[in-house]
Image 1 (cartoon, helix red, strand yellow):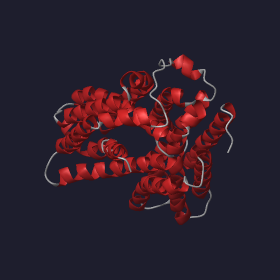
Image 2 (image 1 turned 90 degrees about the vertical axis):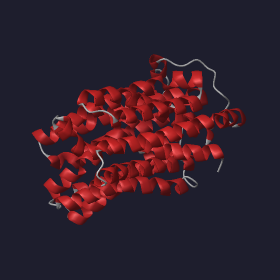
Image 3 (image 1 turned 135 degrees about the vertical axis):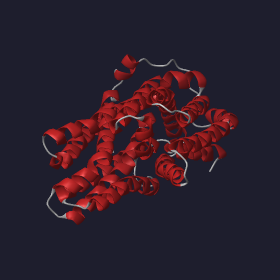
Length: 387
């Protein structure tokens, strides 16, 4: 494994660290801040909006400054925001620091994913996203350790922020490696003009792939947010068991991506996406049909395993579908579509559940899966790619 690839693996672990911090820390935050519990949604929305904006700008930024510089600057921006969180004592200060938090996350996500898609095999994309899952799993443990050690949530954010500072320094030191790889790899440095959003949308298959990312993230995040409630309210699963299996959903994604790295040696990106869709369908059926508690819990794990190959395989196939010169622009709008799906669709199911019933949870997942599958097949037809 090259030295640069090792740095990128560390970057993906570090990128996952802050992603689950707010959820794990908020129960300890909102009381001292003097705000209702629901106010976490405001901070989350600001981060998501900033991430969407910076994802759309990633093509322009990466073409001008290069993937290495954009990654280092973006991680540094996120580190600064985390340290800002660690010294904040009011809600409005957290909202203020949430702006650079989101802006930094979107640029680095798009730049890193495109760089890996261009320069490395599909197995590395799966394993790198597995490393992200590892970071997202470890982050709450760091926050929990800070809280149980008699420190406040500020210390948890400070610890992650300092780790991000260390990663920023490592990325700055590694900048010559990025230039060497870009010059010596199979894909030349791209000096073409950045594409506008209108130009991107006119590319055959662009709208289809945006729809696929929107629906995938809608499905994943709706499952993460509402699976426990469904199991408790509709299947009679004890709350403690439901919470544990909801956690296994993300463990299923992380472990599944580790396994998918080996499967990519035999299967193409297209086949990996279709395999994931089939496994999600099986998991959704287990949730929907009256097979009892054990089948429902197994179904939730299957949904997680099915989610594992879809996101990294879709990203890795982007240069193949759209060409190396346009992949950064496409990945930028893919990331933006993903974050919009995260922002809109889980709350929408919350409204549906409140007005109708949480029993519609599997049908909601199935509807997103059907649109995801249709969008993927439309992408293949639009870009004239077969299995």
